[in-house]
Image 1 (cartoon, rainbow, N blue to C red):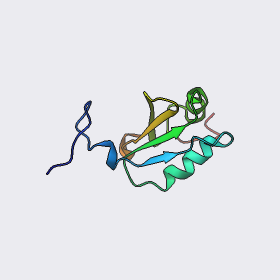
Image 2 (image 1 turned 135 degrees about the horizontal axis):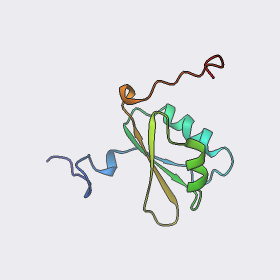
Image 3 (image 1 turned 90 degrees about the horizontal axis):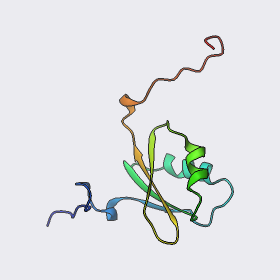
Length: 100
């Protein structure tokens, strides 16, 4: 029997997507998420967070980096979905004080 798929796309069902529960973390949430993501081999990860903390997470992660961040509809908590970006598609950033 083939694996089931999500209703919105053709990826394997959420059962194969790792879920990290950080709903109890208030301080140091972004470093905690980064530490968890560093240990994940999957291309997509769901992180459960405290309800209403989405703006803080967005400001902590910004728009760059190796993971794309989206928030999914959830009840009673926030669900941040991290999708790994293709390493070749990432912009090469060189921070050098001589250039600036």
